[in-house]
Length: 145
Image (cartoon, rainbow, N blue to C red; front, top):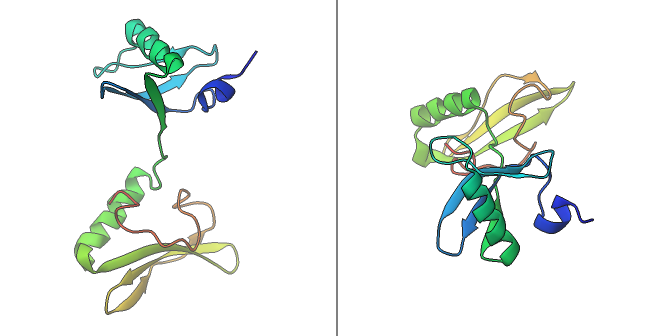
């Protein structure tokens, strides 16, 4: 018997959207541990009708699974960096980088056009900005800011 991953390309519990050929998009869907498709309505309630309809569309090729990219920043990180971006001027920020330094420390570096860069205080490695890859240059858009 094939697994959910083999059939649909997603893991049990992994959130995804379903886009049907008629343009409808069902958000935050997933297969539960019993391999049942879970689809929620706009009011947050599960809908057996939508689950059956969506599953039939997926199997028949009338719909596709769209994987959801996980958020890079948590709420507090996003709020802080948004505040900084607004203060420095969004149009002046070229990139934001999480830098790994010596002694298991990391820090955030913001590249500002015409000013070089701004470094923020160190924090213990792996404790903050966990969704950011070290040394990757992120734009404000990539970070959802």
